[in-house]
Amino acid sequence: MSPSCTRHALAAAIGLGLLTNPGYAADPLDYSVEISGIGSGAITATLRASSQLVTLSEAGPVPPFALAMRARDDIPRLQTALDSFGYYQNSVVLTIAGLTPDDPELPATLDDIPEGRAAPVKIAVTLGPLYRLGRIALRGDAVAERHRGALGLAGGEPALAARVLDAQANLQAALQEDGYALAKVDAPDATADDTAHTIDVTYPVTAGRQVNVGRISFKGLERVNESFARRALTVHPGERYRPSRIEEARRAMAGLGVFSGVSVHVPDRLSEDGDIPLTFDVQERARHAVALSGNYSTDLGISLSTTWSHRNLFGNAEQLNLTAGGAGLGNASAGLSYNLTAQYVQPLFLRQDQVLEISASGVKQQLDAYDQTAQTLAAFVRRKFSALWSGSAGLSYTHDQTAQQGVSRLYDLVAAPVTVTYNSTGLGDVLSDPVTGLRAALSLSPTHAFGGAGVTFLVAQASATTYFDIGGDGRSVLALRALAASILGSSNLGLPPDQRLYAGGSATVRGYAYQSLGPQFPDNTPVGAKSVDAATVELRQRIGEDWGAAAFVDAGQAGTGAPFTGKVYAGAGVGARYYTAIGAVRVDVAMPLVRLPGAADFQLYIGLGQAF
Figure 1: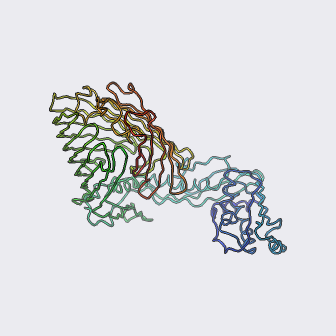
Figure 2: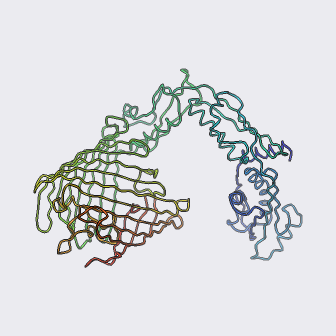
Figure 3: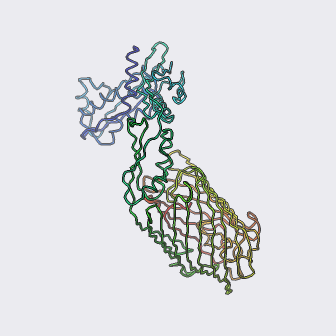
């Protein structure tokens, strides 16, 4: 192959990629495709993806003429695919029933194939020598040399078209990130040395000059105040132009909850002042929303809740959420429960990355462990420290009436909880299905209970869930969960019943009823513990597009001493998943591995979203 031919082959690999043509009409002639000469791996997968013969084979039988046309068109496609892997002196020999696509005897041979028998298509590939990168040069503005490292290429590595193209995009992105907003890196020029089997690559670069962000305007604001939108921006006029900072600002605005979409328009020319103006184009969400949720478990019965939300109360993305819920329907062991909550959320509280939440709630519940009627006022400040870390601190007051074992007590509880969280899953929505990463939280809640004997105590809790993508495609996931909590400053009986710790149920050990693990009164009702720990191993497997299955083992304990010192109970089960646009519908069945007196043989859990 001459240098010019090889150069044209690389240009074809870079410029054309692996495009496919439209399909052909069906006709009663089946065929099979066999590719030989390269074994298996990425090259084989790419050849099969770029071959019309392969990709259209499942569309049904085709007329002989169409089969010959597919074969004829496939040869340059397959050669271009091999070029892209650095094999520029490759050879592709394609036969149908032993004949080439241009053989005049092919139509008659295909007509003679008996009905129901597939025409054999064989593709024999000879790779030839592997070409490697030789000299890598930049042509144009000298400033590009400062960013040569962004290319990510080194002489001597295989001359892969995808890597050469990626380097072009990487260099242009690096220049723009350094303030060269109009920088352009054109398609590389490639020259081959067919004796040394190398490819020299030169990137033409036009950097222009460094510029700053200019005037920032908004498009699409209707009910959201522009003054608030400007305050929400994390990029400002006069700053050095950097696409990453602009994208950061776009994501921050999208995360306010008041916009359904945020895009940024960057012009392709400088303003008269010599800077780059930006336009943030927003689409406001509907001001009001209603959400419904429900789940069922054999231990707690049916739970239903509804939330009405106002997303933009005063024009500054303030949220008002009103929630009403009930539980216990169909639960024979406990009565009906209800809760009412009003929550106000104010973004950009005192600083860019801080949110104020104020809530008022009331709850009335009848559980196996205790009965409770309580009203709570709380205020929290939540701050995002980085992309992975966040935290909150707050103050709450609860007027708490509880009854246990026929004894009723009234408490007034004042707490000051502090929480730090870490999330590397890349997901902010609890209904989304994580496949990699870690979620972890540590909380400390110093509390004083007025009433009864009066007691001051500290609730400390650490929890973590982590996910491993076993197959690399998100379809087979190993999910692990761990929890440990302890109360310092009092015995379990010295605490209000609702402040004690409990185990059993979907949040700790499935297979056992909610609150059923730990200390018990003589009538086998729960006392409540001062420590709890639990762990879960769960394997999740997608089946097809919409279905999935799970198998899990949970273990944990609740006791009166330190964590990890009590009797451990374990449950195991299996589950089914049906994946929808709003999350997975989950059905789990779990059995206790050690039976409790009078306990059910199994527990059933139905809900929306994964268990954790």
